[in-house]
Length: 557
Image (spheres, rainbow, N blue to C red):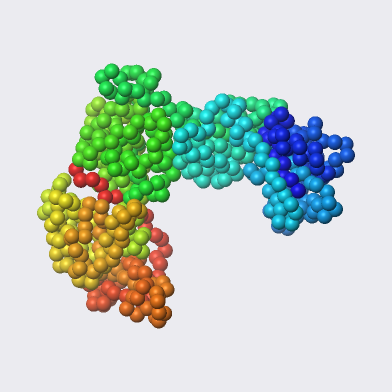
């Protein structure tokens, strides 16, 4: 059995091997709709002989409804099983069968259903073919990807929200299977901010071929054999240049042209795994990236994009620089760690943007995964109930204010997420915070010490509040201090000897804060004896969950 790719439609784009296999085959099989016409057969028609046995595999349904008890899926499963059985008859009789398919046989092709059912029973060879994706790019004359860009190929049948998210994060993309899905695909492209550069190709290399700008296409005119193409961003991005004065300018951008914009993004606590699709899209679309060099290094390098790294103590200057670039027509992404709105760059950018001459520059803030949420997830669920987020840095506020807030939050029995706990020049704050907290919390209150969460040097440990060692804390660390209700437990298989795990053994230690809080009138209120320690029965869930917050340790100002 051969699976033969015929290419995108033009018979001259068939491979030499495809022509050879068709010439040598006894049986030519092809799929068709109930009207009997087959695109695959029409492509290969000039190579078919009168003595070829033809096996048209006619779909029971393509669009519309069906009365099969298993619905559409059930009808198609029966069809593929019946088709495979028909081909098996020929193969058992010693005949060579060529199943021809437009494009490539294993790329969204119907041949794959025969392959999965028959390839383990008969000698099989697949002949690759030129795909519609390659044909569309060739017809547009536009690079799909270059350098280290990634091409994303999506079926238009995906839910609109899923399409939007994937398109927003894609460098380049092709959406296939349009037809009736076109309105939803167009909306997804627009919501992803890619409509301006999106192209349309219909029946590439076939009779009736049409190309154009996606935004201008009439939805009622779109057939199934069409694709939406979001070409290389690098190809669409004007190359940045240096002016004679050393100031970065954009090719073709002059004073008085339409202003660009600024988007402030959070990269999460570490690398690319923590980026949201929306943030990926914003980073890919930017002409310029501005940020603390450590955070910029997390962002992939893209051709034509300028990167402006700086020290971690110049937030206001960095914000002003980004806004100046936007006034000159640049699309600028200001890069923060974690969430940009928590102890990070969003405040600095908005503060500068709220003054002249930047009031008219569009500014957006996109959220990111926070260090608090990342560390909490690694440890279990210590933020499962009410919690407060504080920074221990006294660079921007007096220590007296920090101490007052620590007292208030601890007295309210809130779990605490403590950012910026220490640095090379600040070494006493953690010890002092521990003293203040012990005035309100039991010595065995669990504390999560999360360092470089998501990074190469990740370390997450759970210690008693009384045992918190300031020497083990630096600026890459976040502390999560439990409430009176926070529980620690050991779970998982015991290493090396079985037993019930008494004493912990090699079991994993986890921590969580129950969502149900004891009634203040009961004897189990905050600070009650025995509130900490090993877990018994977990609290039942409340009807609704709270929405998580977001942040990341930010460089000190």
